[in-house]
Length: 210
Ligand code: B1M
Image 1 (cartoon, rainbow, N blue to C red):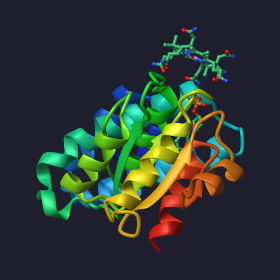
Image 2 (cartoon, helix red, strand yellow):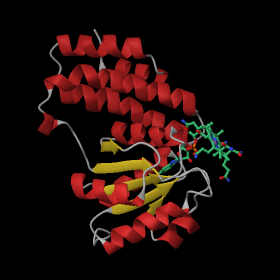
Image 3 (cartoon, helix red, strand yellow):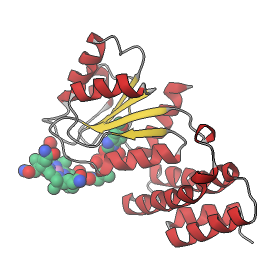
Image 4 (cartoon, rainbow, N blue to C red):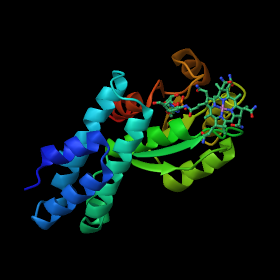
C-alpha cells in the first residue's frame, strides 16, 4: 500500500516514475487529492527546499525533485476543481530585459509552485513595459524579477520606477534575485525583498504576504 511518506521520499529522490506510480496508487485507493498534494508531494518538496538551502542538495537534484512533484500534481490536478487548488498567493516571474538566463529563474518558479504559490512565468527578456502590462492583467501579489548580468540588473530599477508611475507599486510586492543581486542593490532600487536562492525566495514571498 502506498503512503504519503513513501511518496515524499520519492519526490526527494527525484524519481519521476515512482512518484507517478505512488500518486496513481493513492488516487486509486481513494485518498483525497488535496491530501496527496499537501502530505505527499509538497511535504517532500519542503524537505528538498530546506536541504537545498543548507547546501545538502544541489541544482540538478532540486530540478529532478521539482519535475517529479509536477508529474504527481499532473495526475491529481484533474480531480480537483480549479478553485480548490491550494494557492497561497500569485507570483508574476520573469528575467529582465536583455537577459536570456533562465535556469535559476525557472528553479525559483518551480520552488514557488512547490511551496503552494500560483506562478505566472513570463520567461526571459521582459521589458519594464511588459512587466507592468502583465501586472495589470494578472494582478499578482508579488512580482519576482531575476537578472544574471550586471548590464541588465538595472532594468529592475526601471521596472519599479514604471510601477510607481502607474500607481502599482503599493499594490504588488517586488522581490529580486540572481547572481549579481544583493540586499544592498535591492534596497537601492526600492524592491521589497531580495532572495539569494530559490528556497529563500519561497520563504521571502511567504513572509511578505503574511
Ligand atoms: Co551567461 N553569464 N552569458 N550564459 N552564464 C554568466 C551569468 C556569467 C557570470 C559567466 C561569467 O562570465 N563568469 C557572465 C555574467 C557577467 C556579469 O554580468 N558580471 C555571463 C555572460 C557574460 C554571458 C554572455 C554576455 C556571454 C556572451 O555572449 N559573451 C551571454 C549573455 C546572454 C544574455 O543574457 N543576453 C551569456 C549567455 C549564457 C548562455 C545562454 C550560454 C547560458 C544561459 C542558458 C540559460 O539560462 N538558459 C549562460 C550560463 C549558463 C551562464 C552561467 C555559466 C550559469 C548560470 C546559471 O544558470 N547558474 C553563469 C555563470 C555562473 O553563474 N556561474 C553565466 C545556475 C543557476 C541555478 O543559478 O541563475 O544564479 P542562478 O540562480 C540562483 C540564484 O541566483 C537565485 O536562485 C538560483 C539558485 O537557487 N536566483 C533568484 C536567480 N534568480 C532569482 C530570482 C529571485 C530569487 C532568487 O527572486 C525573484
